[in-house]
Length: 449
Image 1 (cartoon, rainbow, N blue to C red):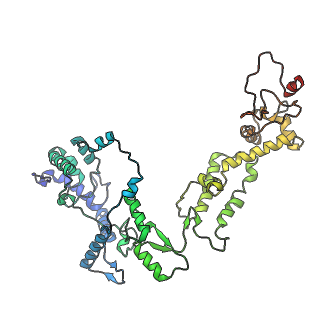
Image 2 (cartoon, helix red, strand yellow; image 1 turned 135 degrees about the vertical axis):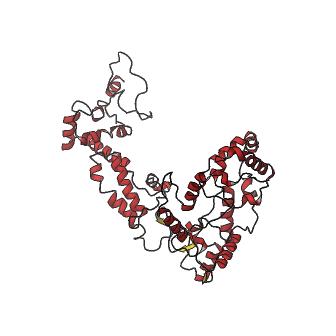
Image 3 (cartoon, rainbow, N blue to C red; image 1 turned 60 degrees about the vertical axis):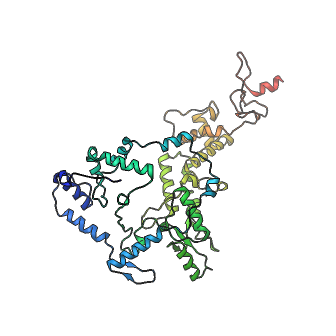
């Protein structure tokens, strides 16, 4: 079953074909009506040809393929090996431990008859000016003349979905190898994702995982680290079996080396610098001033960039959020400080000093100015209060949640306002104050008893 077009392409008219052909040929998508065919477009064509042309390929044994025939044979052989499976797919082990998630209703929805409307939506969702296949038809042709060819298109697609048969002519395509680096030397430099030969149980596990999950190992982004005790012959055999994975001298994960030798100085220098220098520098300011969230975020970003490293200003991938790295070491993280939380903790520590050391000069000054007739937890932020006091006052809630008063003789402990009951989660009396009750201090309860 195929698509038959009875009308010649000339009926489309040069006004339609020329702009489309120029866009596809020149490789630029911003050509608009009225633009002149200046030297810019031929320059684009010559540049693309020069950049994409494969003039030679390096042999595995050394030497070069230079003629078109040799290069073509090498490419065909390479991809025949690449897409040939040496072992059949075995999913029994995976599927046995995977509970069924497709319900009967979902299965009916997935296997129902595909209607014309769904096929049309799929066709019109394609970019109209993508490169055409061997038939020379880009998606814009099917979109523009849908009313003429829709019967053939719908019959072909529905027939394939019902029978599983698709004509080889329809399935043919043009494959262009796009270089991923400047001056490519072999076919590995033209492919984004590759599969190599199996290397024992490692490759079997990776293949099984890839087939079951739909994800594929990117060989170009993978690397192998060998011990110093591994000889060159064994390294070569392993690399060959792994299908072109490159060897590296040292690898890091989340900024830390996978292998730590006898010398620990260079390995942990960044962690020491961050914890003892970068995080210590703002400590004094953070103990008396509340830093803005934007400033804390900027400082955290600077430390994250230093941790992950950079080369001549080039940004590196941050493999984990800074907030995760700031988690505790017992949770498997690095224990870097969260600047916002650290700032609040330092401010609460200063408030605790005012509370527990009332004879200090700073305690006397603060009390006389901001809470002369009450305790610090009942104080308010007055108009035109200093930024130091506003900063300290902002940490009162956190401190109060963790402070319980010692009863003693009870003369300074308020029954219904203060936290003094150890058997209560909040520390306060849960029952409301009765009307007409004259008891205010815990000392009244003690004396009454």
